Length: 185
Ligand SMILES: CC(C)(COP(=O)(O)OP(=O)(O)OC[C@H]1O[C@@H](n2cnc3c(N)ncnc32)[C@H](O)[C@@H]1OP(=O)(O)O)[C@@H](O)C(=O)NCCC(=O)NCCS
Picture 1 (cartoon, rainbow, N blue to C red):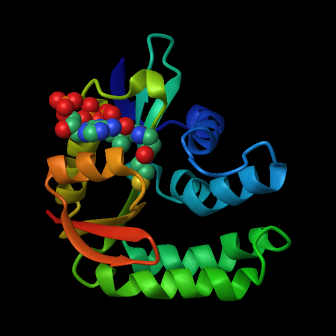
Picture 2 (picture 1 turned 180 degrees about the vertical axis):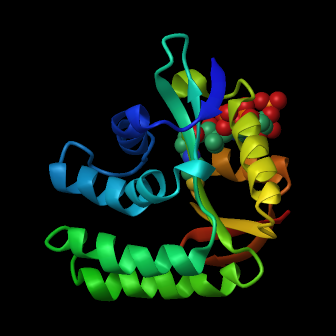
């Protein structure tokens, strides 16, 4: 397996990985798959491929990713305008519920402007790939003078909690079953 920058050919596999690695969701439903990819994948690969990296198998197919928004304020602006409307009929009270979620994260972005998601298929896990993806992204964000990055993770996802602590993330807050982690760069 190898790490490389995101390429447009990876888009469909990134959506698949986003769905496959989501736990506690009924991903047999098309609506749920659309909700997950719209909330957690599409914005990043479609708008900020320069801060998205892939772990690929020997056939150069994506088996994991780290995807990022460099500046949460800009992410929020574009997400509200272009992505929230796609959730109509998929998320109840989509404008209100997405708005509340976006607003609740703004405070972390003051000190940690970038926002990330990382997901690897089981076949790519526990081989150091997540660590390599993080290091790749951190190096890129430092080049771009981004001072920090934050993320949210379910407090039930004990494996990911251990991973983020291992990488050196600091717990910034806990609310409604989600832990917010931040890293100064
Ligand atoms: C969480 C995840 C990104 C970690 O990536 P990874 O490549 O598996 O992690 P690494 O191999 O780089 O692990 C580095 C260290 O983190 C810790 N760690 C990683 N995964 C862990 C797990 N499942 N349980 C406990 N500790 C873990 C360990 O200390 C590990 O070192 P070790 O393997 O020498 O013990 C990856 O497993 C994953 O995508 N999981 C499923 C999707 C997910 O939960 N994504 C995060 C959503 S917020």
